[in-house]
Length: 351
Ligand code: TXA
Ligand code: MG
Image (cartoon, rainbow, N blue to C red; front, side):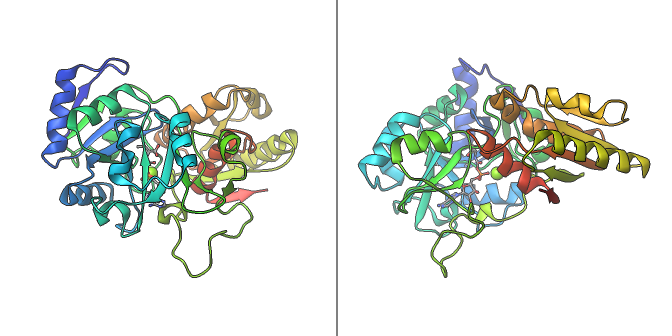
């Protein structure tokens, strides 16, 4: 049985938090909201508890977890603070959606880091997550609280759908605000490498670090050949809806929408149930077509689109569509993270 306890997202009830902290300290699994997505937490210093995360998610053991801390002062407990730049990043972006990859301290079990000598760390910007971290007094290892390969959960309902019966407790603090996961930044390389674009933009990081590379951007991995992939979880198909997702990445919006409408028409003629994951302004391009829409909101509001993205994939799946047509939003700011998630959810990319 999975218990679900409601908590206020701004000022969580200390008694509820105490229940959750006790679960963490007895080696159990607790899903909790962060500003990005819901995490599936266990005591990061408890090897057996960490292993249960992998079992509950169906996640391969070679995909390392992010360690969450209550405050930036705790960083040196789990990682080696490599440089002044690292300190500057933590001052600027923590609490917040930035995960730093740094050399690990020996106390961090290998199950957390999948045997790597590095550890991924962040301080989440969410009152519930922070209260839980403080009350339990230990670092909490937490991947996104979805079954491996599914869209990440942005509500407690999503967590329950994926992990109900497999974990002890879900703290329901309402929908998350950022909606896409944290940016994973590898600080053990120079220039630093964004392994996963996310809530903190490349532009914001460049403001502090100067040049920043994005893993896979040139089509080729930038890491030295012969080394294991820097971030095992980055390489696989992910976030996949049940439906077949076709992503359109073309230069010109009008052309893109034209191609999408044509495809939708063809699929409908073949008798398929078609879903469209598009911006408010795009909907007119599909007038008269018997398709289902998930409206991501105005295309001028990338934050809103990021916030609704995973919920959109799940909602269209729930309506039983067979094919989802989605479009790209470019690569400025949060659009890079949106592109990354859609790309990895897609079965086919049309560019
Ligand atoms: O926003 C987030 O980051 C959410 C919330 C819950 O904090 N967490 C999350 O965790 O997205 P997860 O496990 O779904 O994704 C973590 C990513 C994985 O792709 C993993 O491969 C990468 O971070 N990662 C973890 N440790 C790493 C390491 N030592 N080196 C490189 N990549 C690492
Ligand atoms: Mg995940």
